[in-house]
Amino acid sequence: MDLNQRFELVKRNTQEIVTEEELKKLLEEKEQPSVYIGTAITGRPHIAYFLWVLKLADFLKAGFKVKLLLADLHGALDQTPWDLLEKRYVYYSLVVHKMFEAIGADITNFEIVKGSDFQKNADYFFDVLKMSTYATVHDAKRAGSEVVKQADNPKLAGLIYPIMQALDEEYLGVDIQYGGVDQRKILMFAREYLPKVGYNSRIEVMTPMIPGLIGEKMSASKEESKIDLLDDPKLVKSKLKKAFCPEGELENNGVLAFLKHILFLIKEDKNETFIVKRPEKFGGDVEYKEYASLEKDYLDKKLHPADLKNALADEINKLLEPMQKDFDKINKVALEAYPK
Image 1 (tube, one colour):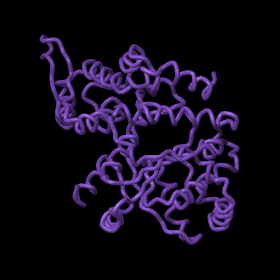
Image 2: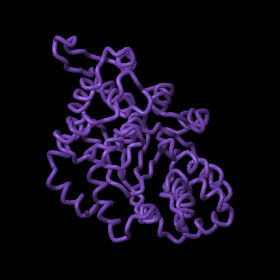
Image 3: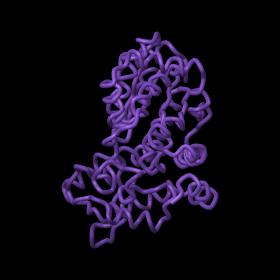
């Protein structure tokens, strides 16, 4: 794979890269660059997590060393009970490997890092204090505004969160931090404040956010907006049947967004087509090799939402098969990590 192919693979399905010039230079100068994504172990992972799993697979194909930071201490800073941190770490570790299995990714150069394994280090804590003498309350609060849960009487933890996330780039020894575009303020905070404490700024890569089934961001805290990784086939079909998917409309359409940013990338990588099954009286089955063709038919009202939802439900159920095969084992961990 040449330099341009590697660059295009990293750029695929992204919304913004800060900066593309820095990324090109990195690929030119370093044989195996490194990247990480951090996720606070708060809510239960759902199918929108496939977006970043796919992006990590792109980095792996492009020759990167890839790290997933399961940020247990960040989870605590964002209101996860301390006594559930270890259980949620175990759950995330388990399902992430199943998600990579579902897309058929080679994870030879992938590793999971537990946040507290290095964030309790004395040097790290010293740097947290040092950065706190440079960062203003305004900047720290603004950085975490779209990431940390907001409250009328916020805890101090929300201001510590972005400082730690910035320092994670240095202590994980990576060249790139990757996250959703909702992380943009916190990633720009890292670029600004790491040099102030003597460290290099990193490249920041961002992918779009996927609307949920009710037309909002897919959220672990809103059951009706998401499909859980452990939902059975009947429940998947039921949730999709109720999904917000107005005929001929794209805006806030989580069904189309999932197809565009996740499913069609999987199909592309496997050289497969997306098949929508329909009765002959409604035109019969139709195949799509690319998302643009499907979107055009949908906008032209040649493709009915009900047919599209049924086809997507079948594909999502295929993706969730690795979880269903080990359902009892995974569900036992889930019930411990997320007690009702």
